[in-house]
Length: 463
Image (tube, rainbow, N blue to C red; front, side, top):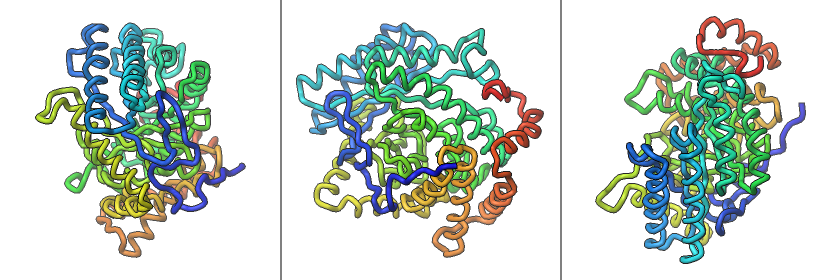
């Protein structure tokens, strides 16, 4: 099995605003070319989805106008908007097309009139249900697999600058794994979810190329983000933080598949595993952290900025605040943070700020410890040894993450509770017991999990 060459010869090369393969798109946007760009993420108010006309007005006339005008008022030169499609947009093309077209027209108008550099990412709504079937032709009632592909076509034809998906393949298995604390089941879900990512992006990438749209990529939001959120913070104890940390290492293998199918980034903001992937392929990434508190809390709010190329706030519902609308307030915070990063770069202190971001969260949790750029690079290197072998690289990344955590605990750099340490040792034993052949692994898991997980249908993954 051939290995991949690491994009960065050492972790020290990785820093925010710089990628090995910068991208240019939209109206003057350049990502990964030396500066970090804010990526504003938002959601419409409940009730705005009642009619296509009302939803278009919400996205185009209100949200887009508010976000761009706040950037203009504050003097921010670059902005990427991210429209994460709500379910109505995925079910009915009459909802999505006016929004895609309207936002594109607005971006061009603002760019021409004010000179602000703009682009719009559209993230499709994956509504597929594993019980009904994930692949085209399986769900004869709701046709969600077909709707997802049709959504990609609508976005490309309507003028999206970047197209992304948060795919759901393998989630029925990883959800079971998280509730049971079963790391082998989680690896099985990631492995099967990888085949789902391949199926989707082999369809999406040619569409993007035909319409000159940037295929941005996928994320493991449905799997490792679920583990991270259920693990929670210091007051939570239902899922051990060491378990979610190792889940994150595995998930990088699944997210990588979209890039192997031709996606070019910038990766999704909710893909916390992105530093691992960037260390391997050098493509631009988006990240969220402290400015994502409107949507959720995490334990690496500063660290996420360490080597990002776009800085996002996750999704905030559109509503009034004292300082303006919600999207204006959160966009302002994004813009100022990016200004700080870009100023640090311009005066030769970019790596100093990167290290401050990283050190402030490095030992806050096992997951932040593994996502620190030096450790992310080490996990990436372990995965790259196995190249396109999705099973072995996921397993290798997880074992490397386990080794790093145990070494850090032994060196007294990071503290672990008794339960966290017991979970980590159990994970290590379970992973080391697994075969080095994916076919044998799948056969083993099929015997165990088909009877246990009622929603699992092997046909979703062509098994």
